[in-house]
Image (cartoon, rainbow, N blue to C red; front, side, top):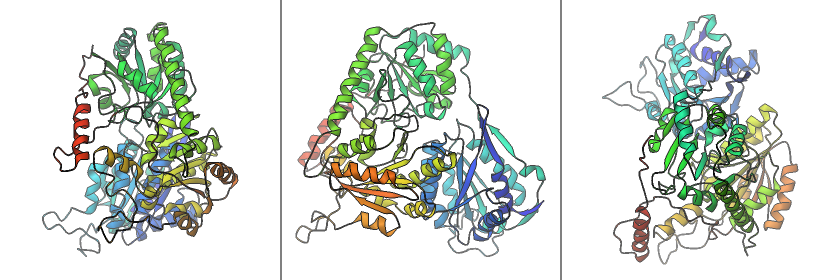
Length: 631
């Protein structure tokens, strides 16, 4: 079959499927693309040909920003539990290098995304071409080499004969839950347009079976032995529980053993917030309930977590002498963290196997009862934060409460950066396993609307009865709001709540805590007298900006009005709607007393910085390596 390299790529992608538990999915639900001289005559032409002659085989979606389209693909992948994703193509030079941030986000969060950046001429006949990185010491080096450390798979197709191996290698990584992340195939622009005689079997439908590794019997026995010796056990549920669709197995395990369950950012929703054994968020952005239990835990069962610094509160959360970690994960490196008892397995399969392996063992009744009591106490704190009644502007916690109660139990809250993710982790009452979508592996400003676009696309494609609800601050909105236009174009029912607080609230608070006085974190005029950015508030109207992009905009005057506007927004269909509300950036969410390691200047002429350094050194003394015996 004679096709160009680009046409062969598109046809191959359209034929790929994933299968898990007997259910088959399209691996690539479509392809985002922004075209230029590096891909317009290659992948662009191939997508057009497919649209004309094989409609629906690989739908094309028009993005406005290359980084944003990768974020949207990542959001799509997360919403579908990594069983489906989208491909992304961009032109040579700045178009492709704009995707680097998206590649890093996908790999850090272990989300499958296929990147097809355009590249220089393989023949080099016209070099240096427009936008080429000319490196005399390495003529084969291009800007796309920057994708190598950011991708779980990287290849460059210099000749058509190399394409099949590149495609198969990329898809193998994308469909492996232990290895997945960004897969990059760089396509030189002349090679994209080159024709070749391909074997027909390259384009036959191929089903990639997504494995569920079962725990090795000896590892399972070691894990069970560690748990049976526990007096104060705690489960930390990570994203692996959600991706494995293991929430029912986690619930059965918790109820069979009486072990309380704390949640990471990626694992939030593993249990409904009101389950008696759900103790909420853990770590630097955690609840008092989870962190009090963590401080005293003697055995910690981490399921599907990579143990980030926020989860461990920079290795200060778990304070009991001799605390033992039992780590269940499909990725072997994560099971060895904190020298834990390693169980390399699918989260659902491991939790299911642990119940009979424990032989009816249960945590002490007093420990279980204490966990429930602590969780109820934190829930009362959450309700008080929802009902704070701060004036003249509401607190951010009140906005979160209004959105939580004003949206459906299966709706999906989307966020990524600023003060909002930490507040959501503490305060959002998750009612559905897929109801919480906060990107906090990379915590990338600008992900919110783009990621929400991907979530909304996945909801539409699966026919799910829920809505994507993006919570975004003005700082992240200004980073990347362009995909609102894509949501308008696709008539997607995306609800955006824009919280205006005239600056970077999260980094402002962090700046205060390290003695830097919120320097560079507020949107202010430069004062002619001081020469500093401490003048009046800038007259920025982001609601008007969204309206200019074709979005329906509703402005909320206060929390009562916000509830009214949210009801109107949820009734709106056929395109995105944005609700704008102003908040006071100086009102913090409830504090759990946890810590995050951000070094403070060791010497300073500023008194606040010196005091912050003393506080930092005191907290630093509580850090520990967690290098315990494997047992």
